Length: 170
Image 1 (tube, rainbow, N blue to C red):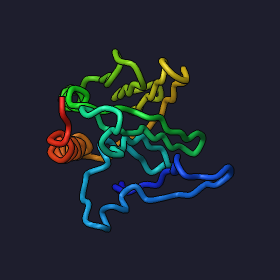
Image 2: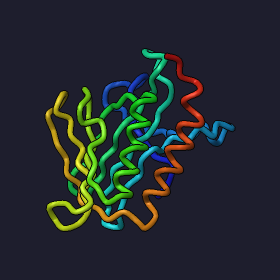
Image 3: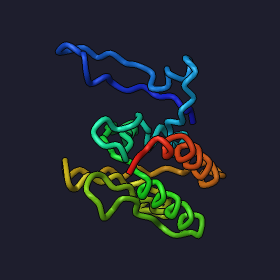
Image 4: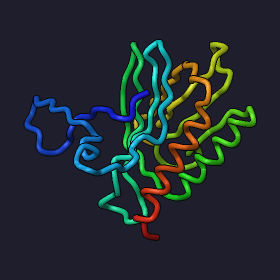
């Protein structure tokens, strides 16, 4: 699992342009901001990730982020707002996963939701990304995360919170 990824620039593009940039290019310039909050992937080419893009210019207490789904069949992304309560809810979700429970993260809020079922419909773990309030699309991604993935995600969460939360107000 690599901590860098590519995304299309939204601003400054002419019609038909598809310019890719590395989201962690700032790291090469001394910016070591943690960007990957969630990175669940398997060796079949299935992955669900949540990337922190930076502080929200519209909301002093929020972070701009995105959920990225990649499979051999379907790929997509959706914008996401993160804030302290959502990050704390992710910590709670990790605790429940560690206890063997399925979780729903962000299920009772506007915007996308992420559900993790430890034994899904295909007798393997599944990550479900649902955007009922926007596109009304649901994507179910079966994948088997590597050993130690919960501890890895606790580390990622701690890094994101240590870096980003002190910059947020409200």
